[in-house]
Each structure stands twice: as C-alpha cells, then as structure tokens.
Length: 295
Image (cartoon, rainbow, N blue to C red; front, side):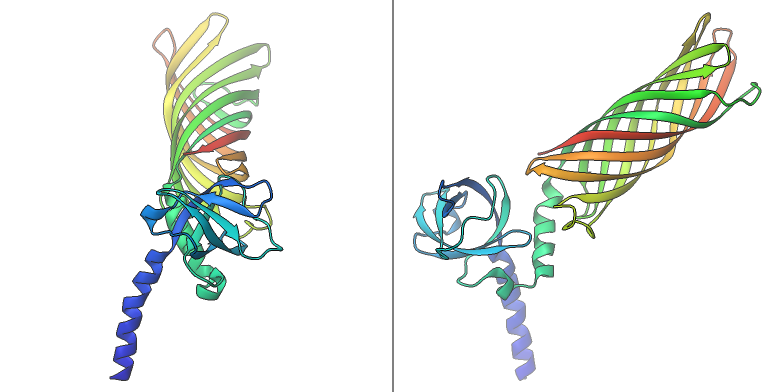
C-alpha cells in the first residue's frame, strides 16, 4: 500500500511541476547588468519579493523580483558578484524557486521542455543566393557531349518545424544557367516551386556556438525556357530528389546565417517551335549562402 501511495503522489506532483516552468523573454537589462526585466508580472502570479531561477542553455541564476506590474517584472540577481548572463531578447526558462534549476530538474528534462516550447513555435523565412555547376547531362536525340554549364539562382523559403529536429519548407527559386557547347551557347531560365524535409543535428551545437548542421531532401516542379540564336523552347522541369547539407549559425536571437551545398537532378521536357519535344536530364552541384529570419 505504501508503494501505491507514493506512486499516486508522484503522478500528482509531476504535472504541477511541469506547469511551473515558463518561457520568458528578457525585455531589458540594466546598465550595471545587475537587474533585468521580463514580460511576466502579476497576471502570471509574480509578486514583489519572490525569487526565481532563470536558466538558458548552459547557465542558471537566481534573482529576486523588486518591481512588478501587471505584465512586467524587474529582477535583481541575488549573487552580488554575478552579472546578468543573458542578452536582450533571449528566451530563458523561469521557475519560481529558491534553488538553481539544475538542482531541481535534470538538464535532459530542461532541454525537452525548451525544445517543445520554443522550437516548435519558431517558424522562419529564408533568403538564399547560390551558384551552380553542371556535372553531367543527357539530351534526347543529341549526340553525347560534355558542355560547360554553370549558373546562379535566388531562393525564398518558408520553414516550419514538425519536431525539435525535423522541419519542412516550401519555397520558390529563380535560376539562370548558361550552357556552352563548341561553337554555340544557350541560356536557360527556370522558375521552380520546391519543398524540402530537413533534419537538424544537435551533436555539435555547443561547439558551434548554438549553430546546427542539417541535411535535407527536396523535390520541385516548375517551368523552363531555353534560348539561343534562332531557337527558343520551353516546357516543364522537375527537380528530382535533391540531397542537401548545410550549417546555420545564429548571430542574433532572430537571425541565422546559412551556408549549404547540394547535388540536384533536373529533368526538362521543352517543346521547340516546330513541335518537337526535347528531354534533358542533368545533374548539378550548387553552393549557397543566405539568411534566416525567425517569427
């Protein structure tokens, strides 16, 4: 019976403990870095004189509420020798307690809480530019050759998390490619809608200062137009499964710097002016850089 009573008490206490955690934003920091302001006040149960633990990814501090309004609270660090370790705009975990968070909850549990509350709600827009280089190609009804192909592109994506490590994105790309054969040059323009499934690794997060390595697979569909002197042809283009790998590095709470590379396979079916269909299958390598803006 005693075991059942203890088990029942644990089941009651655990949900209450989970609800005590809150994510708060550091709204401002004093010039002395001895106090800071958060957006949680009397409406969230904060009263003057209470203490709380504030924890980021690798540090925890104790602070006392010295001024409280309906929506805001000013906190003073209890340790007189310490200074505020957070930046303005940072999201931290707040727990109303008189002990450091690591004494109350294992780091693994805190990470689960942070991921479930922050990552899943932070969608973003990504703006990228890239250059590409052709690796191989096959053109129907044309003798095999090895032209010099290269181009540039601009991309815009909207990315939304599905789990703490998995996201999907949808976006559009404009691409211009120049193909140089012996004695003739062609210019191809493509407009493609793209969707990717992305996986972010956590393993090197501390080493990269909060950055993450990711891999992704994507597909796309759009229109292609190829022109040269006396020739113009257009038609649909499909981006077959593309393999991507990259790195994102945060430099503010709301912005990341991105760099990535990819191997892509494109299949184009363009109709010439005489009605003849020409199918081109090609493999490209591309490298790009960009910026991510969180919302």
